[in-house]
Amino acid sequence: MFNENLKTLRKAKMLSQEELAIRLKVVRQTISKWEKGLSVPDADMLIRISEVFEVSVSDLLGSPLEKETDTNIIAEQLSRINEQLAIKNRRSHLIWKTIFFITIVMIAINLLLVIIGSISYYSFQTNTTTTVVSEPEEVIIQEK
Image (cartoon, rainbow, N blue to C red; front, side):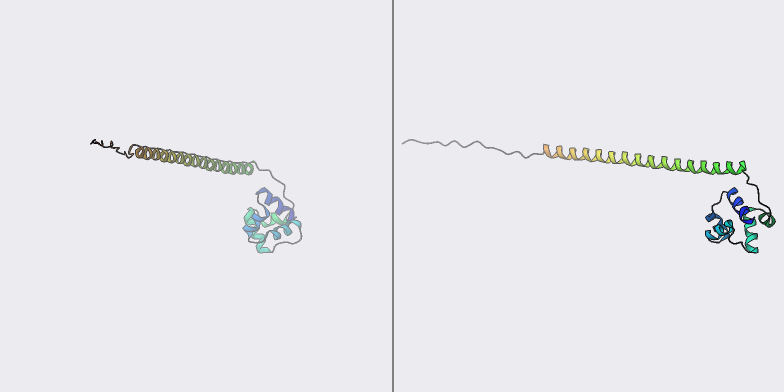
């Protein structure tokens, strides 16, 4: 009876064996043994289990509990899932905005470099050196 009640309560609270084990400060295999009926917890542990599930020890040890599908529990779980999805969407939008901003900045920097490069190129083009060519001197030859 205890093993069935433990499993029913754990599933009703939507806890995994691992999560329940963490709350009770035991290993997951202990929870598994209790649910399979291979062992039972001591009196102190029964009290801690009843506190976690907010039921009396006699309910834990008594006749099998009915499996409840409490709509409040389902609504609470759906609410948590919706919150997690909203957080994920906000993160995703933030990441895409950041990527877009970085891309725009990179394009602006490249354009600036191209403009600076072309300005410096044309400024060197206009400062070309000019060579002065002098006309050859006339040679006067006298005849005798």
